[in-house]
Length: 223
Image (cartoon, rainbow, N blue to C red; front, side):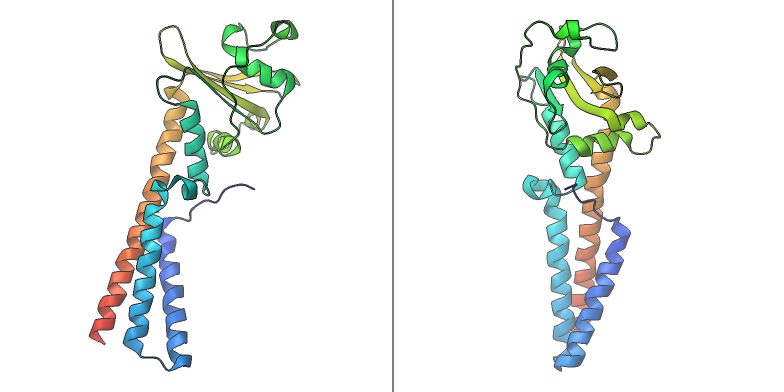
């Protein structure tokens, strides 16, 4: 199952409207005190707003959302400086395609032939699958590049100059081929900007709900 995408912050107005409508319906049919009903609605919005604000800081919950899974994939490919190699593969990838991810930086040219894989392939770092589809979708978003649909693996490693580099492999023609290669930060700068914007969206929505909750509590005190 794919992860969720947080609605834009402006939709917080719909949340406030729904909460207020429910509060008024509850007040009308339960004959409860109106100020207390409005106060309860404000407190409810504050709880929801505070929870949304905290989502980016709670990895287990953040990974339920698209940006959290992309962040998890990026964190695997860009670990501490002590980790030299890291592989992110499509779930179910095996055989020659998985082997090609381990040797890609040692092979010249765009295609990886069977002869490149005749010798025993060293399988060092265990590949991760978490966030693969979300990261692939993030790269493809806003482009018409259908080749991303055939990407099956990301390989990040440190070269002889201790610079982190990235390889992205696809199998559109039934064999491992390089889709993207270069310095890690070049293609990932757009992804990191997207992650910062996603975190800001959580903050904006949470803050707007908090402010709305405080406003309702203020209104309840004036009734």
